[in-house]
Length: 262
Image (cartoon, rainbow, N blue to C red; front, side, top):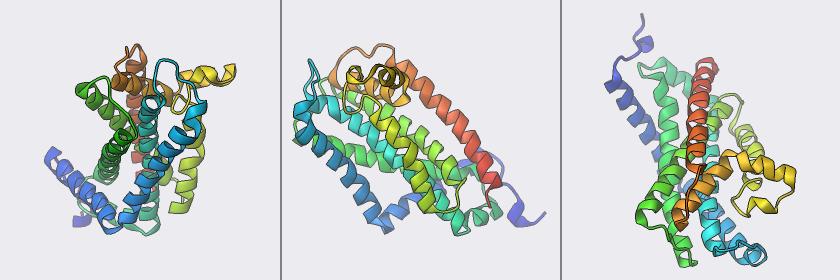
């Protein structure tokens, strides 16, 4: 068997290959810092727009609107950021990089895992920056530091799960432009039909019923409760079911798409 088709064995090789591919993904942001800059500017604009333009018209009884908004914006950050996973993979596919990777003696899972982990690191960086900006605007994590860390961990895990959805999309289309459009077209309705910006009980009944079971709503509600110090209720386990369900289903689908991609 040709050397290029020998699959490396053992967990050690998988971890080593995954680290190498993660580093490759992070170097992309170093070499093209505008990607990171625009990933940061967009959520800051959303935060400023809703806090200062719409905030006065949105009622959140018992809770300052900035404290209501920030947890939702952080979830939006990782959802929109996950689209870049599919864009990057579609770009590699279009340039023939995927075929090169598959010809190398490396773990096949490393290409996908490395890309999603690199975007996870990017999301964590943007979240920390957003917390700093929100603090200047008056946001306070009234639940305390430990609950804030738990909230950020849940957000990061949620974004990681959505990156696998984006990976499946990116590997099924022909180019990065299509991947970006296909990635955002289904995300936008889910984001706005949720509790990110407004309480869902202000929505029409049929939309409220949909928003109530949305993975975005239950995750935002969990994160918001952790950050502001209110009871988390059932939202946390519902969110984890969604997260691990998405991870399992779309990681398997992404691997299948990777094997078939040309």
